[in-house]
Length: 84
Image (cartoon, rainbow, N blue to C red; front, side):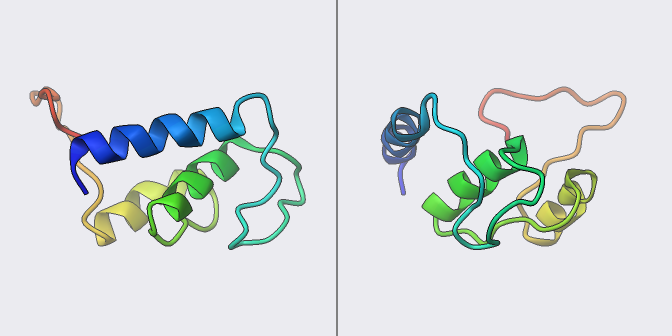
């Protein structure tokens, strides 16, 4: 998928969910804590065809690293345009 396609998909996703609470991801089932920010992230991953993260968000970086989806920056490193 090109950057332009991802951007178009993200814009459509944002419009679809604008002002609406997300109570579940459709994959993990209902969140017992109600609408949470983690639901938004997992729904976006689902839209991209990526398995959602599970558990506490503090553990997500490790899950993302295992999937090759995480870039860590040390104390002297700076994020560059296009990173992420």
